[in-house]
Length: 120
Image (cartoon, rainbow, N blue to C red; front, top):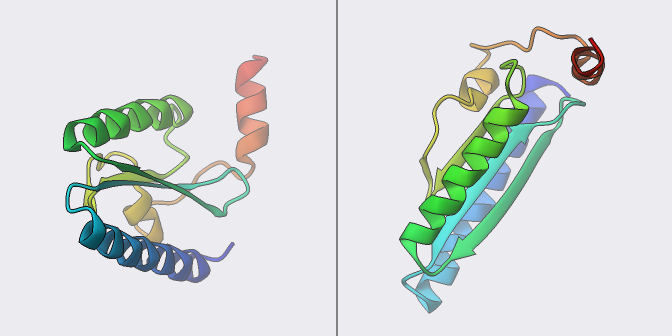
């Protein structure tokens, strides 16, 4: 997928998450949002969100997701970002740098690269 398309999709998803979070916080002011965005092996944008009543639980969940993404991103070629209530909890995922064109994925075929690493 082209970088401009990924940027547009990321901005739309963030705006949608923000809108839903604002609406949910009007109903329950204690709600906390954890967002996760990543570049998939086929160079598309993956995303997930989770809502929590407790800020501590949202931080714990976010840190767990960071650990998971860092494990998958051992070679540094799968950009990601985890946000809690719209603020990045991990800046090492490099997703925003990738979307800004400041970081490039070096492997041409990430799936093939991972398979080679598994069987080498």
